[in-house]
Length: 485
Ligand SMILES: *Cc1c(COP(=O)(O)O)cnc(C)c1O
Image (cartoon, rainbow, N blue to C red; front, top):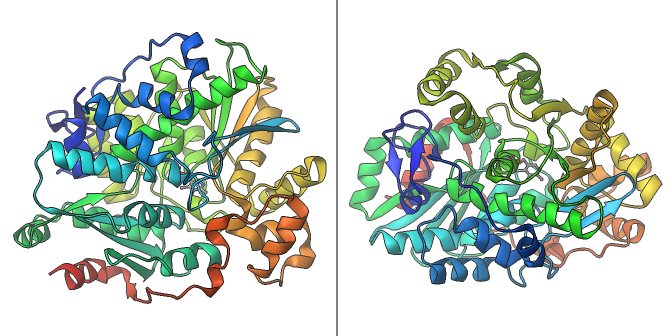
């Protein structure tokens, strides 16, 4: 299996090389030259536990030996997850919820970032790499913590995370600023996620800085979903969801199953699209946005236009105007030459045109008010408490359903635990909580939902804050130099 660049198909790499580089030297992203077909019999898939399924899927994409890949998977999907199923599919009311938040940082980012350090170490060994790897990560809140947790105290790796100082929830911020591990640095920036992501992408293609670092024995890589090593592990849980839905009697093998995915950088939903290309009989994908509905407009009109106000919402991990992974879909659909032009136009004019009418993806979005109503309604009807991102997806699903009149069963991809966004979740349930303290409200959430406060955030507010640096967005490269050179 070869990987090629989205802006130039001559930019080839093996899986190991693509994972180590994170991004193509020309700024494009790596995609598989050809998406593999999964030919395993349904009867066999239905017998598999999560780790076995992960092996069956990932081996199609990676140049690892069976021993290497098993070691990665067994290291990642173990008792760090608070349930042996790893990813439960639960039915509440009129929807199925794919709970991707049972890992250490309570967000779906754990699904990929628990395994990425293993993939990277294995790739480094296979490539005979001698340099120390420096992971640079821009985060809208969840990636940062999941990456820190995955890479803290990993030998031969340093990790630096940039987050928007005023754009994350109190729990998200404390989770990051209290991070342990001498190989970690966490930096707040005055700016939003797009500023952080743009600055980090620029550092990756800065040949001068790469040279200075190489002399010190360092090389950069990325833990953002621009890294193909982030995307591939996410394909697994779409198959997993389908298998569980069959086992629960919701569908028969071969029937359609739809997914609504709360979307930011377009990584999660793209993994679903990959699963469908591999042969999973998935039906329709609803790409759910919050008020930053650049993707909704794109799927409606064919124009991607980031020239618009940026909204800070209650679903901060979706507050994104430049969805990096859309570049991969554009390339699979339209080829490298077209994609290169489109990315050039995005850079110079902030917009581009594309025709997306042939995909099984459509957009829907939820306002802040609709997000709050979704949390309240589902809680009142079923007793189930969703986080704000999952609630955007639920509201989007309801709009899609009203419009399409579809009665295909729907999986709501549930990306975070409500405990990560306690204050907004509780306020949605009852406005009387709006002035409460986010940490005090956890007890109340525990009482209402009957779901215990997850162990990883118990006592969070008593932990020592170890990371206090805040910088201007134009100084991000400088903070990297300050730490490493
Ligand atoms: C990252 C994240 C998303 C968006 O996922 P993408 O892959 O960036 O589209 C949605 N919800 C939560 C809770 C997240 O952390």
